[in-house]
Amino acid sequence: MTTRVGAVLGVASAAVALGVAHLVAAFVGGESSPVIAVGSAAIDLTPEWLKSFAIRTFGEQDKLVLLIGVGVVVTVLAIVLGIASVRRPRTGLVGLAVLGAVGTVAALTRPTSTAVDALPALFGAGAGAATLLVLHRRLASTTATTTTGAEATTHAAGPATAQAGAETYRPFPDGVGRRRFLVASGVSLGVAAAAGAFGQLFSRRKQADASRAAITLPAPSAQAPPAPSGVDFGVEGLSPYYTPNAEFYRVDTALIVPSVPAEDWSLRVHGMVEREITLDFEQLMARPLIERDITLACVSNEVGGPYVGNARWIGAPLASLLDEAGVAPASTQLVSTAVDGFTIGTPVKAVTDGRDAMLAIGMNGEPLPVEHGFPVRMVVPGLYGYVSATKWVVDLELSTFEEFDPYWIRRGWAEQAPIKTQSRIDTPRPLASPPAGDVVIAGVAWAQHTGIEAVEVRVDEGAWTNAELATEDTIDTWRQWRIVMPLQSGNRRIEVRATDATGEVQTDERAEPFPDGATGQHSIVIQVG
View 1 (tube, rainbow, N blue to C red):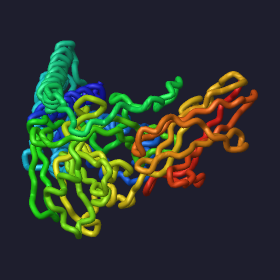
View 2: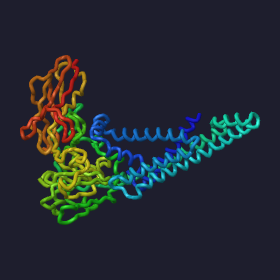
View 3: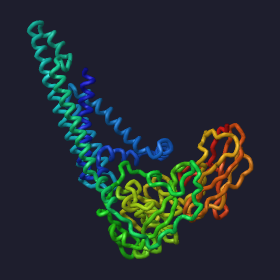
View 4: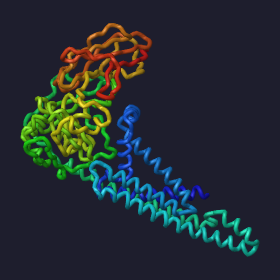
């Protein structure tokens, strides 16, 4: 019985602590919530091999898995503290204080933290302690009943028997005490749920969603023509030419999606420039805008992996903005910072060499989704996202590679990261069982800012055969390919390789994504019927 009572005591107190902390964080900033702050700190401290494992294993659900893990750890700690505090309430209070201190330190050590970021953990710990004391008062009445019985035993059987009875803790000797405790625990859990719900109601995400819904994208000065006929074969199972926003990959370090209403957004351009520039969102939308089809890829993408997508972007050219600021000739790195303090370093030459690098505000005909950087993100063709595609960007500083190491560079990834030529088989799927005969094999290939010249396919290490290429849109977008091959019954191994516009053939040498992108040729095995 004591174990069950302690578990309820601990879980109810912890739930109230987290619910109140979430409510306070809604007004202070979602990143200051103890669970988010501790989880974000865990991401920063996680070794690179473990991060790569998490991305490979859990994909875009890696953050959810981490949050579930944090929740499980908190629950276990709460149960242990609750059980320990049944007889010694001070143990539970000390435990809550320690957990509150951990949350406070985690919140205050985030890159953009201020003193107020300590408030959610402090208020949460206080609410949890108050809950623990209230629930202990309910236990006190049952303890008093037990004590009264022990005193009666003292008069009837002597001091020795009384001492033995006092050492046996038996909560709830009657049904009344149990009901009081359970009612109090239920009320505590209700308070926790209400606090969490109100925290969600008043969260900045609601404000950001409302802000996004109110935006009408202006017509770009340089509008992209419609995608040429033939860019999409329409083969079943083949990735569509334009990746829908809801299906576009998302890989970043943000446990909670940063939420910035457009009316609160501003961008500062400074550092090695002749003049600083500050823009708000209205001023950015008023600038000449371009519209371009650009494929993005993540450096964490394994050969044949899903972390690549193509979209039509609208944004303000970066080069013209930097021209206005007057970039110093010695500047080699454009350091971009997100609202949560995350940093990316981009070669200055990559945003000033004529490619369509932009501060994007639109994606596939609508304002950027919040998950993809609303209100503003960077898009730079030809570079992996970790050196180019800052989401929720609020600061651009002209610097040098020697002067500053951004987030991923400090963790061993390469400074320079042009996207490597890759190709992928989309259909048939691995281990598929098509009937013997002509089988349609199709996929996509990309070599951003270089272009794809050819794609070849072979079966069972036979001769390479040229596949049909879809019409090229631009050298900054992927190309679909397809081929029909007669396949006999049995296990068949299919391989693909691409050749870029310079004539370089995709290497068959396998390399992991770390430190500058995976290499190798994608292959699958199918069972032909």
